[in-house]
Image 1 (tube, rainbow, N blue to C red):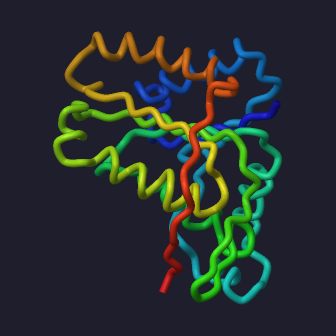
Image 2 (cartoon, rainbow, N blue to C red):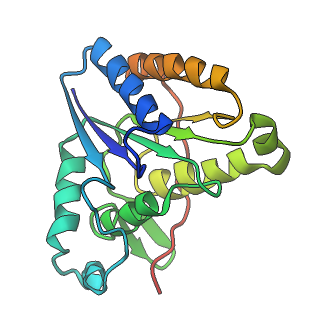
Length: 210
């Protein structure tokens, strides 16, 4: 079993980085054979959509750095995303990674009225580290907005429907939460590939760059 972990935080020594470490411990305890980490900040991934990226809409070859990330993804049997929740979504570097890497012809095909995900379905894990309380998410519907945007609109659209999402709430206000969440992240890692994971999401539409 080979797991790709996409990590998006500017400080590796952050609490989000500690969550990543705990998650990796859980993966190893579960018997994961190999783990590859795509550390987007430390690898200086260019997250801005480039003029060359329009090659996908002409059926031409994508830039090398995009193809390299796609090859990483193709190699994995499971994928995990670890990130801080900023403005109720991914950090810009991770959203930009999706914008560039999940391109037409590789992640999906699109024709007017017809679209199909092309990614092989595999266990997919999202672990978001949030500063706000869970009650705030429920009050304003942020959690459901994130689920529709990310789980359904991005991952499901591209064919990834075996998706499990965890948001670790209120890490700014409560040190007790941080200690508990590190244990929870380790347990999430252990259970990630277990048979109990049966959650599926439907695929919805996507937007092409204008």
